[in-house]
Structure formats: structure tokens, C-alpha cells
Image (cartoon, rainbow, N blue to C red):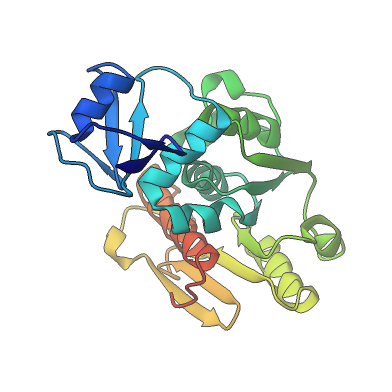
Amino acid sequence: MVITLNGKKRSTCCSTAFGLRDSAGSCTDMVILNGFQLSEDCSLSEGDTVAIIRKGVMPGKEELESMMMARHTPEVHCKVSRGSVAVAGLGGLGSNIAVMLARTGVGRLLLVDFDIVEPSNLNRQSYYVRHLGMNKTDALRLQLEEINPFIEVETKNVRVTEENVEEIFSGYGIICEAFDRPEAKSALVNTALEKFAAAKVVAASGMAGYESSNKIRTVRAMKRLYLCGDLENEARVGSGLMAPRVQVCAGHQANMILRLLLGIEDA
């Protein structure tokens, strides 16, 4: 029969997935059959897609692409890998969103921030002690390279204003707003929707404190604007920004971006 093994079509006389694994690798390798990781052996059929993954070894670009395709299903991964997304603000929301998008295999990311990593960031942002004092753009790019070295990552170490939105974000069909301050949020969202006729904006409002995570949701506020959060709980005295709710909201934004890349526009 003919199957696809790690991205390449090949003929095999093996009748089971584990038999194929043992002939092509070792018994400790992971096997993904048609997007599902096997814990027990399974029969192979004509046209199956199989990924055999050696533990602890970074594969080459084509092999990694085939493995991610096996996980995501081919049509989904092809759309995602062609996607371009800009992330504005690399704090608790943006740093975690960028990591999720890199893990998802988004082909091209723009990271925009003007700040450095400080100790107070470590409670909710995707940085480590070794990143203290670094530009957030540089620290996050290093992380993304360790997650997926084959995606294109562009960085701009600049403060976003109404005057430079068009210059910074031109060429990106999806813009993720992940700022802390309301005035920065409105400047980016309003200007982007005005200047870019087709761009979609995924923004956030309300993820502070430790209220129920079930209050955080995604809504389609306008035709090209999506809002994630509970729209109520902003950071204030007595209600700080904490990792769980911030990351729940970041997950909403990343998932909405994924849906848009797949052509799904409903929230």
C-alpha cells in the first residue's frame, strides 16, 4: 500500500502502525496516525498519513512541517502556515498569544513592543529570569526560535501611535491588540480599522483579578473587530493582573486568530 510517512509518499508492506515504526525507527518513537497519537497498535490503510517522531531530537524543516500537519490535519495546517499575524504589545496577553501562534505554526509573525522585561512581568508574561533587562521583542523572538525555528518572525521595537500604525502594520491581515492601557488600545484599534480596509483586529478588554474564568468570552463587536475578555474587570487598586485569567483571555485571542486564518469569522 502507499502511505505518507513524515511528509513523503512511500510504499510499505507493513500492515500496522507499530510495525512501520519498528521498521523505520525504534520502539521508543512516537507514532501519529492521521492526526492522532497512538498508544496502541493500529492497522494501516491505503493513503494513511503517518508521522514517526524520535524523542528528544529536533527534526528538519520538512519533517517538522509534516509532523505538525499530521497533528493539525493537512488542510488546516496549510492555511495556518500561510498566515501572517501582527501582535501589538508583548506583555501578559501578547507574549502568551505569540507563543500559542508559534506552536500552532503560523508562518509569519510580527512582534511589536517598546518595553524591556522587568521582574514584575514574571508573574504572568512568557519571560524568564534570564530575559530581565532585554527588549521584549528580542526575548520573545528567542523563545519562538526554540519553539519553531522555521517560522518567520519580524520585530519592531517601537511605541505604537496613531501616526505610525499604517507604517508598522501594513501587510498584515490580522492585527492582535494586546496593550495594557486603554488609550493605546483605542489608538491602535480605531486607526487600524480606518486605515486597513480588509484587516481584522482581535482585541481584549477585561481579564484582571480572579473572577470566574467562565466570564471571559469572545464577541464580534463589529464586522472586522473581535473582543476577548469579560469587558468588565480592568486592572485597578485591589484587582491586579494574574496569570490564570490573563492567559485564559490570551487563549481566546489566539483561538479567534486561528479561526480567522481558517476563514471562520463567527466568534
